[in-house]
Image (tube, rainbow, N blue to C red):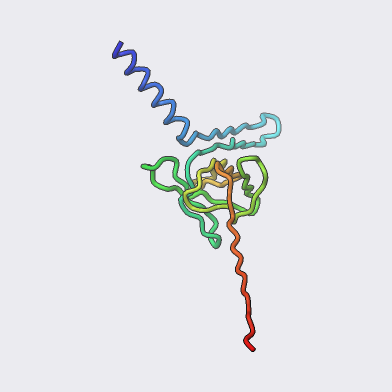
Length: 138
């Protein structure tokens, strides 16, 4: 009974670790025998984790898949789409550190190019307003 429980715990733990871990990408290269044309197709992969840093003047975000993993740079372009949890497009101003997200990317050389970021929590933007009252004395 103890062995069965231990094995079940290990299997569940591995399944959970796989869920939060980075998935592998698939690159398929085919060559047409008649024309000699080579076609390379790269499959989009995803990572689930937390955005650790974003600076608007850069071309990357840093992203961490687990709390004990080192942050990794994911590069974005003007074509990168950011979605809230309901699937609506939001602006880059919604990105901030410690925000859980799923990053969909393709690997080009040693860089991960982000195609889409799906935020896991709704973004809230606080607006502050100030009211000034002026009273005249006689």
